Image (cartoon, rainbow, N blue to C red; front, side, top):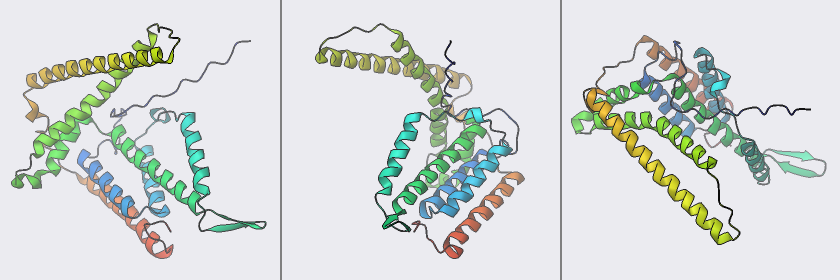
Length: 280
């Protein structure tokens, strides 16, 4: 009897947009950055259940409109679920209101609810970042940052340089991530020496770490040299942020929807539900 094939885990894919031509893909990159920044400020000062739920609904609707497949999301490792369960159990011992009676014992759920709220907030923030990554081309980020930072130019702030640096970092990060993954896989294929003593194993691990770091630095320098030659051949670094970009009508519609949803959620959180941003 043959064993069932093990299900392959989906790896983390960063800064690579999902192919498609949807209303979310067509939004200006600056609009997405402003929306994420605004939602981040809202959840920083008012991390209540209602704002978190409203933002989660926005993320789900945006993902459906952008036709993001389930395979685009990475597989959550089991050890992470174990850590989450351990954190929830530990937080439950903190007690606090609300308190429910179980027989002759009163159990406080305040600590557990706070842990669940923080976990939900983390998932929502990760979802915001994932939506920007799945629907935005990296080449659109630098011109958007340069346009958003235009009011700072009279103050002699190097906005264009910052935009170019950000664009190069976003372009290089996925490439280096894949290079490091290949290096680690190649290192795993090499035969290992069996050391009987703990000092020998420690020396071997230190040597392997030094080898990996040396190879990673070499790969990063080689990639940087290739990227520099490519930028020079295309007219220099100034061309990266030179493309004119502006928000369009659909961007203003998106702003209005996000403001309406977040404003309604904040009003409900502060008035009807009688809670504040502290989640009490």
